[in-house]
Image (cartoon, rainbow, N blue to C red; front, top):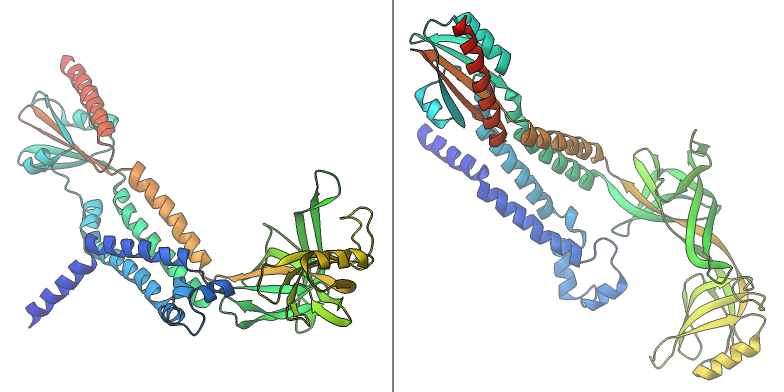
Length: 461
């Protein structure tokens, strides 16, 4: 019973620690990552939902069931990360004891088998009468302080450098596991979302990637929002923003939080409080605008769509209360709108001017549309903030730092071992290195030449 149980355990461990499993999981992760690139994640654009048959379509339901719209939080993706972590952990458990023994309890005598398996070796003829203390001192001078052992009437000297370098690969394994753990912590306990705050307003919640409202646990007020534009080639402001900046105040239970009054938030300079980080991501305007369509009066919100009496629809793109900076010679309010005809034809973009009704009539007749006149409106700017909380980010940073250190040690600081065996007038030199064999051979040749010169000097004395 016990033998059978151990056999099953050995097979399970062999499977979990196999390189085949590692490659299979890595290939699967690469393939499923394509899904997250091709299929939109989080809040889905209406156009995409319509292109796959709508929310009631079988394709949409299948994608939602498989978690394709939030793939990196899906249970099966987290499972692949966990399986790769288990694979690395099993590899470490299986191989670490052997490597630990080599690093901490090396073979300090040179056997014939080790000599045959060495990276390189050499033999020097040395008189049997040479003083062993001087031989030890000579080895120490060229290779490092040796460990001395007497065995079978022969003197063995052993020198090694950086035995701990053998453990670097397991540091890399640990770093990968830490990065995965940090990612899983961030996916489970963190969140991402968006919030739009009109200037002068206060919000206490945001919309996450699933379209649900989540509370901050404190309040966020936009004291001021400003945007500056690059100059246009012909003079005046262009439509390309140069900088947009939010001045925010954080409050908790109605009281201002020290250090967060009139805090500045601009692109590439985020603001963090209680683990929640705010990034400046967008801006716009909000408010109500009045239009007349014939004798009908309409009120339209900023960037909203309204239905017209003839069955067509109108979408407000942008509006200004003084058009003179953009149209020299014109004054007063103006709005740029898209009109979608009732017959389903192509949309038409119009500029509706409050102080120039004759131009509105001319444009309407040109496109066979009703006359739309902008009367003005009240609006204020809003700042769009990306909201992010990732409690696993420090675990990921620690793992990344550990990986850099581990890779550097593994590739550039090899474990080197050199054995010297002296007896019967022969000094056998054998060495082994885990990396950089060509450089190690050159080092062993220098040691051989220096020892030969030193021992010849001793002999002539």
